[in-house]
Length: 308
Image 1 (spheres, rainbow, N blue to C red):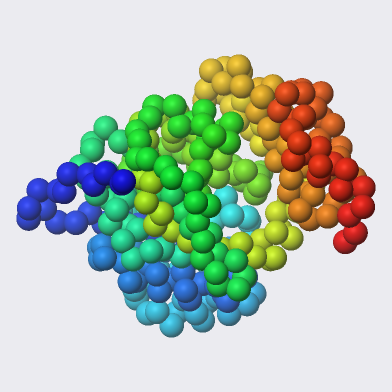
Image 2 (image 1 turned 90 degrees about the vertical axis):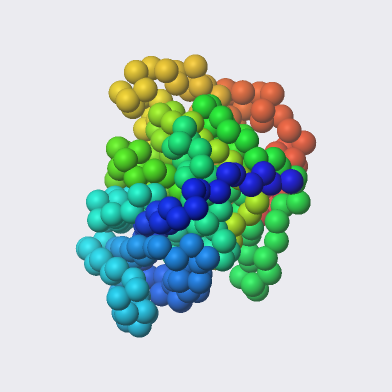
């Protein structure tokens, strides 16, 4: 059962929470995302949409919400640059990110803000999430989880031991603005950013799902293009970052192997059989015990028969 944090002192004004929504040609999803923000039980919000050069009806959709939403337009520079623009503009005490194709449960901001208000030692809070398919079916993976705090969520995040979505996180503003998203990455860029946040501050996980993450073909096609282009650049961006002063070197081999397995899974789902097998073999050479999993082996065999 989810533990309820101690409520703030009676009479204390609710903190301003900035919600940063980067978007690029996602106008068809944006209305639902924005409505979910405006229907929050926590009312003191600053909603910022950063339009990363959209050529669809994004601007008109945001303008239809009037002054309840801040609209920022920039030439297309990628999701990292858009989030960084939002960070620079945000004036809230707490900062949350929301992808334009995701949406919030009505108590999402309140649940996370309560943790930060009642536990000053916590720098970042994040919750479990629901998933939604293209038919609108909302579901959960069924795993029971418990609320917990940790100083080592960065390790769990990097090694994929943590259920984490960018849209489910909320950070104290000084901590959030200490770092920026890497402009040279658009696949894994959120992990690079949040690993620094978790490395710097104690985090808190709330087992109650408060965000719905939409899975759709548009995002899948984008992911595949970026996966092929970027490969394992994500690993170098993390391990070799001077910020850590070598503290993460012990994870290099395992992190690289897990990245290859992740690339294998994603490319397999996209029916890129040859490329998928290449990444599987690299993972096998680094961490045989991790790669020699019956599920992976079955997919390797099936990958020979994939047709686009």
